[in-house]
Amino acid sequence: MVLELVTHVQDVSGIDVAAKNKWRWDWITNTPLEECISKAKEDGTAWCSICRKTIKYGSSGKKALFKHVDSPPHQASKRSIQTNYNIGGYLKGAEQPGDHVRPVVPVNQRATQLEAMVLGFVAENDLPFTITSGLLDLMKAGAKDKKALGEVKLTRQTASYKMVHGVSKTLTDSLAERFNQTLFS
Image (cartoon, rainbow, N blue to C red; front, top):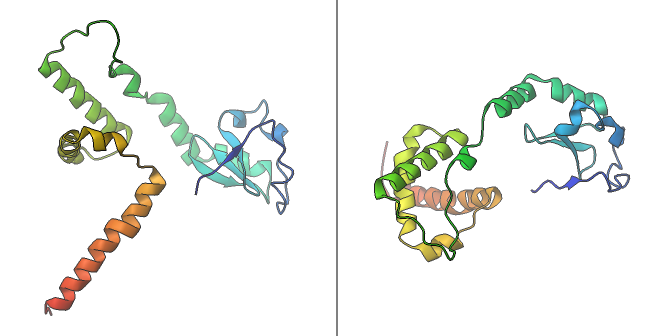
């Protein structure tokens, strides 16, 4: 499910049909809520861009929004965003082909840069460092077929669906078949 957001110029009167407290833009205008709270295209629902969570305000109105902003998880997420920097801007990206001659970069420098990118990805996504060797093996395998690698597109929803109904189902079926063929006590 993709959550759609409403902009200030859109009319929200048709969205909050069943909500006791209808959305009002003045709840967030010129308040601390303005930087992180947005109206979702669902009845009685708002979206916090810092926590990436939905907030149900339909029964208690703007109190629910202020309560969320004052909650410890929201404050922790806000502090985390303020103290962490996205390292993507610090890494040199791939140059676009142009008329100029590109300088020759030594292999060891490119390897060091790739290591930094992998470690940055692991750190930014809160992954364990034990995954780095497997991630490098995956990158090496994917680099062999550049045409297919360019065609791969996986969103969160697609990945979740394929894991639940594809890989997981296949593994469960093969495990059940193996248990049916093998006696165990």
